[in-house]
Amino acid sequence: MADRTGHVTFQHGQAFLATISERWNYQILREVFFGVRRFGELKRALGISANILTSRLNDLTELGLLSRRAYRSDKPWYEYELTEAARELVVPAIVTITRWAEERAGGEEDARRSLLHTTCGGETDPYLACSACHQPIVASTLVPLDAQEEGTTD
Image 1: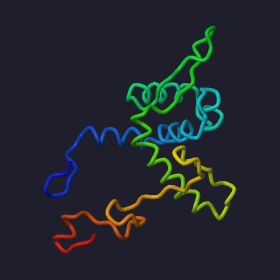
Image 2: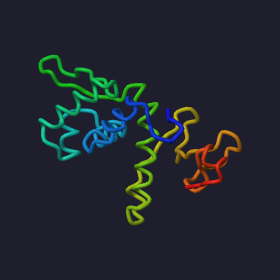
Image 3: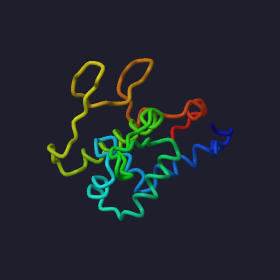
């Protein structure tokens, strides 16, 4: 929600964005989305220290972005997965940021991670589209309605 001057006033949204934009939190969420779910796997994939990983996993679980499930009965070892709430908000952001980075990775087509659309079963390259005309949206074609009405596009 924004006030008339365009400043963000919704504090919870700001706190949430600060949390997921923290370096390790974003990387953990990205890796969990792409199938790295166990503590040791995350530690190796990210090159993160155990104490920082433990702290970040606890934070993300408390925020409701990750759920954890014990996978051993003899030790407190867990697998993590994105919650439904995280999938609704974080997955589009992760896919967008990952695709943007992959496109600028120096043309390494093999570095691109494949995505499956489970509804149709096809491999997909998701994009943001206009709900009115269904054309892809790019940054240069999207402005806030208030700015358009005022004749400004910056």
